[in-house]
Image 1: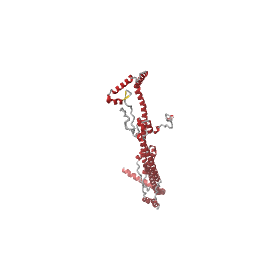
Image 2: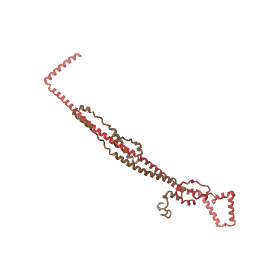
Image 3: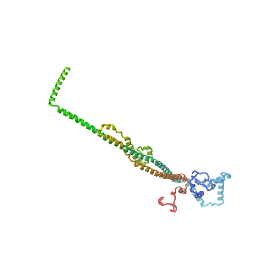
Image 4: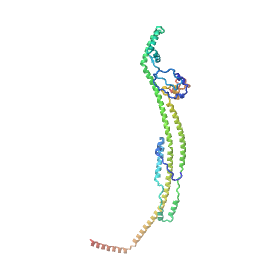
Length: 252
Length: 161
């Protein structure tokens, strides 16, 4: 409270430190103004206020009187005070007292009956706000982390550029080599084609000459066979056949 | 390239493929198919053409001197190597990309530092349950209400509600 007012002037860096005390339910009595007012970071405010008895009197009072008067001390004090006020008419009982009594009864009854529900409802509203805020924060943290991951991945990817250039150079080298080999092959093929052509021409020529010669010789021979010779050769053939048939008859 | 026998550097295509971002897959596939086609073409060609049997031709070709002439010219023939115009360009490209990659990595590292810083700030924030609205405005400056511009509640334009 007051300590927070003082600390608003403190540098913001101190506020970045996480608070050491967890947000727990503090049922212990709060120490009042016992610490130095230079506490940073500020401890969180307790969830519940200090303990009170009968809704009015703080517990510290009873603890304060306990060593001297025991458990019933404060009650005796209270009763005595009340009787003193009433009997000496320091507090006058009038119509407003009755009104106050009725009103207070109704109020206390209502709070006791509906208090927890209203408190739960209010807590739920707060919870929802907290939940959305927390969700947003978690989402932000998540997205930052994925962003960092992605950046690192992109860096790793960029390192692989040497592969690309090696592949390109390989392509170029292979293309040049293939071209060179194709050229060599072309030269060889052309020369071989020409030489083979010469050889083929020669063989063809020789063959044609041979064929022509043979045909010419045959033609001339056939021409030179005179009819006289033909008759003689036919007669000879017949004689041979007869001889053959005689020998065949004999064989059979 | 100095001579014919520029060694082909082995490219680890698997590792290469890993590093390709998805939006450049198509280009990578095109490069790979080109490379495969060239490899196949190169493998199909013999390294040296077979030797011509001059003795056979000398014996069989009747024309005098033709085979000798051919042989002389053939052995004197130098097939020109194809000129390499691209490797220089590729090297230049490589240098350029090295530079731009270095720049990109610098920028990326700066971005990572920034993200780390924000992450740190978020992680070290006090839990929302213990914050006041002032603390919230400190942690997230965009939620700060502009009390100079809008002096009356709700301190922001009605459209932003």
